[in-house]
Length: 94
Image 1: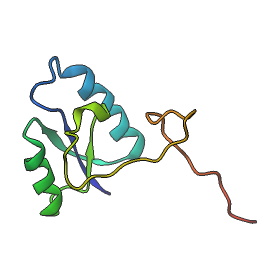
Image 2: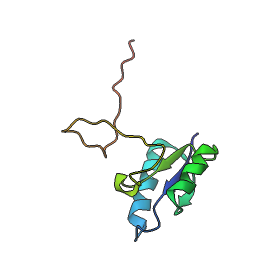
Image 3: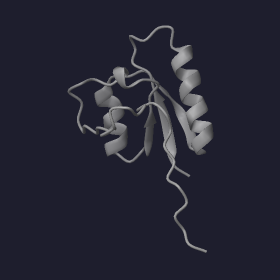
Image 4: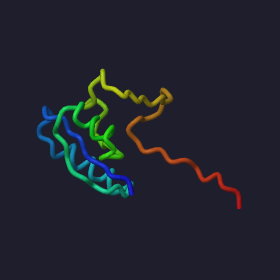
């Protein structure tokens, strides 16, 4: 089971709506919840580098600093919704 933290930047207030959205995501994916971080992005990044955390869950892409590293971007179709969960159709042959 992957270890996940919720990251809500310190300037986001109230934080409860973001936390609630992230907790819902954690439940859907059966991650092991390790806590809520209100630290700087660099601190969160270091927990990933150190192997303490497998997944960082955020409520909104706008919460991420634009100059973060590592930078991961989702190439999405113009008519798609980047916020919705994507599932891959079952392609296994019987």
